[in-house]
Amino acid sequence: MKIIYLLLIYVITQSTAFAVDSYKGLSPISSSCSDATKVFKNELCGQSESKHIVEGDNIIIRYSKTMCETAWGKQWNVKSGVILSIERQLKKPILMTDLQVNWLNLEKSDISTDINEIIYWDRKNGIGYFTSSKSISTIYYFPAEKMNKYQCKKRIKNSVKNDPILLPNSKSSIKLKMSF
Image (cartoon, rainbow, N blue to C red):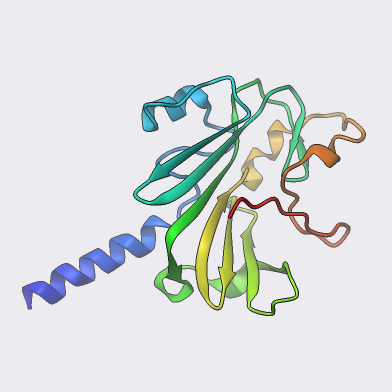
């Protein structure tokens, strides 16, 4: 009985660990490279991207380099070194059913000709799940809707072409930079 109880606690803690809008307390737009140095001791600030391996997962953090830099289809009025996105490539994919997520409430994007590859987007909380055959292999943390107040007032033309990732919407197709 004690083993079943411990197993249940483990499953609950593992399933809720993925359903938050930040990674180890780091959130796009509200966290910076100095915050990341507290989590990753070897973090070097001043770069546009950093890569880490944590418990076998590949973690890619993208930082702003200039004011009004484009990320996720929007331009952000933040200083250099602010986290724009976090990509977590899971060493071991997890089943969608393992998370406490209402998948029907999320926006869905088919990203390839493979009917089994889908990304689920939670724009309100700034989290995306790359799935294949009902397993999650990558989790994206991007600016949540509440961060829209940090967008640049005036849009700079032609900056979208430098955007590594665009969120899908009815007016544009998805362009996704993945480093699998």
